[in-house]
Image (spheres, rainbow, N blue to C red):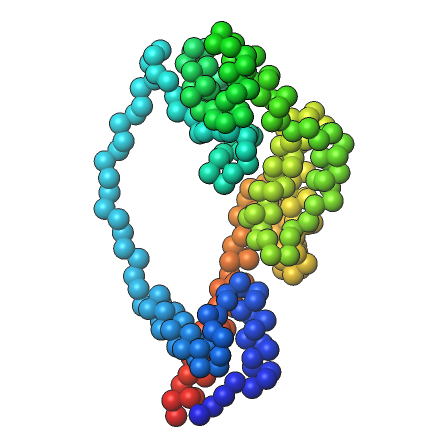
Length: 256
């Protein structure tokens, strides 16, 4: 029966670690069992076909009336995983204002969405508080308190994390820049070039090495992000294929 060499195990371990795949095995026998199941699953995935979901009827457009109370994500300010962040909650409210909902509808939507400490903040303002008064108070309690200069320093010093994919890196960078815009130390109309440049320069070195020509050619941040994500995905797929072939060949050798 053919066993893994030390060099093979070292190579396999590094590839599995890079792809964040953790074999469920404590012994050599367990690893062999996991390896067999993994290869079988890979074969199954290769032979599977994509099923097309049946079409659905077009949803009936929502009709907004003067008495309609829009639904807003719940916010309590306690930082729990079930709770939306203040920034997302505030964004939803700003969208309602832009969509021309009535003052009464927005105020009611806000009160219904608040829980815990956030709800108490609004309650202390009283039932007659306007939307502007509620938002001003919420901003003072839950809004960003970092200085604009500190946020910009964070933006320029940020880089892609060791275990962070390029999509997560780009979103984190966008969030930092958004805070800078709110603080008035960055301009929204300059965001494309600022984000495009910082996104690429903060990538892992291996990604920069193979996407430099894309950075020189593409002037739109979102388009560049999409192209880099594709490169990263193809790289991971090649690594997965290496594992699949390596494990399959080893299994075949053990059966001889």
